[in-house]
Length: 136
Ligand code: HEC
Image (cartoon, rainbow, N blue to C red):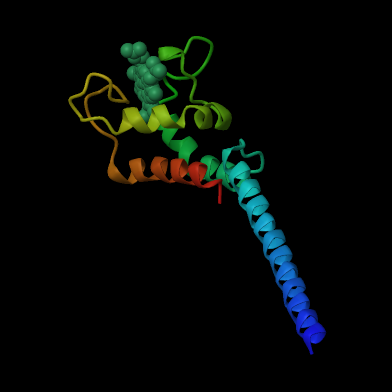
């Protein structure tokens, strides 16, 4: 009777240990999963073929129309090249900043004192958002 009782307690104890073991390994699994997700976010994204297609179709024409007359070649205005996918992508934060300045700001781009249209701005913004979200 007493021995059985002890055996039961012992079994329950072992079951608990097993549960704890299983729990801790799944917790460890989730921690590792989250860690690798976070790493993916902070790493530079290498495969963004969709983003590049979007650039070619929607962004490059805007750059050619409004920006590359000054921002291309060997001595670009502000030492800033905006004539390729990689140079545009590398400078997207500054681009978003200057095109969204007030129309009367002395730093607005293009520097004619007039903002780009909302539809053009939203195309640039879309690139920026995709970049930030990992190029989906
Ligand atoms: C008529 C020429 C001209 C056009 C067109 C032009 N820019 Fe500029 N941009 C300049 C000049 C000049 C500067 C440098 C201003 C300064 O340093 O004060 C500059 C600076 C910038 C900067 C800041 C660079 C830095 O860090 O100093 C950004 C970003 C920029 N331009 C983006 C654009 C974008 C985007 C467009 C198109 C929507 C554009 N520019 C169109 C002449 C131009």
